[in-house]
Amino acid sequence: MATSQRKKKDRKLPPPSIARIFRNIARLGRRKNIEEPTTPIIIQLKGCCIEDEGAIALLHSLEHAHVHCSLLDLSLCGLSNLSATHIARWLANDNKCSTLCLQGNEIGDIGGAAIARALQNNTTMTSLRIENNKLGEVAGNAFARTLRTNSTAFKELNLLANPLGSSGVSPIFLSLASNRARVMNVALRRCDIDCSGIIVLADALRSNETIISLDLQSNLIGDDGAAALASSLKHDNRTLRILDVRDNLISTGMYALEDMIQTNRSIRLLQIEGNDFAGDWASLNKRVQKQMDFNEIGYWKVVEKELKEERERLEAVAEAATASAIEKELLKMKK
Image 1: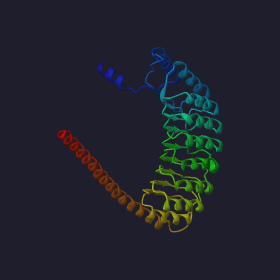
Image 2: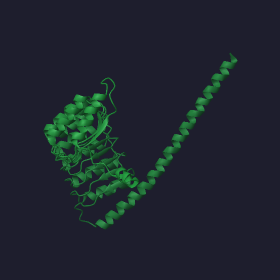
Image 3: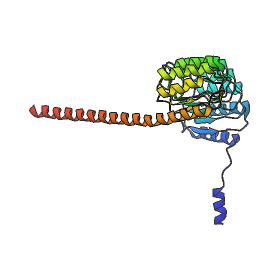
Image 4: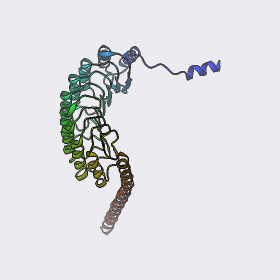
């Protein structure tokens, strides 16, 4: 008997069905007082083929029951522009959802632009996963406007595996140049970006002070793009820590990147494999890795120095506060 009960206890529950989620939402809606909302729930439907009809019904259910969710995962659910526009309308009135996952669907420019516009005044969304869809130039322009108007919308910008092209990402790069958007990680892998877009990015990096990680793997970057990136990072930018340009079309531009990391000691990781370099790859890779190791050691020396300076500053502040307190006590005693 005890063994049977233990087996039942150890047995994993099946993933929640869409019907059970609807029932839970309705139950929460009946129990709660609209003036005092319940704690936001988590809805994870990754891989459930609910398609547009199911997603729209789910959103209507949330709105009707006045139930909020902090995480909504509808990735790999067969969604199109139709459900994306309904998600955008829901986001425009939502103030609880912080994570929205829509990767691996069929969302195009219309749906992507609608979601981007909905986030222009949203202050709670910090993570949007919309990679591996069909976003193009129109959606890219919409996300650029959102980055210019909303400084809290994204800490990570994940648009990888969308056919944005240089015309779609260039407005985004221009928005990042202003530092209004506090984006730290940018993932634009497999976005069909050529040298014209990378030259815009290089100009933006000259003034950007927030991006620490930049993923440009599997694009169409050639020597001109690599040279522009290298020049920007060599002379101006000291914020970026990780640069991934693997599987592009870079040949002689590799020498410019190698020269850059010898000057810019802020770069912790430079990934360059899979390009069209025709020289001695083993020798180049060895030199780059050696420089990376040197940069890493130098980085920790800088960190140690900064921590020491911060300790000295705090000690000086504490001493000044103590001296001020003693002075006040002496003045009181004289009176």
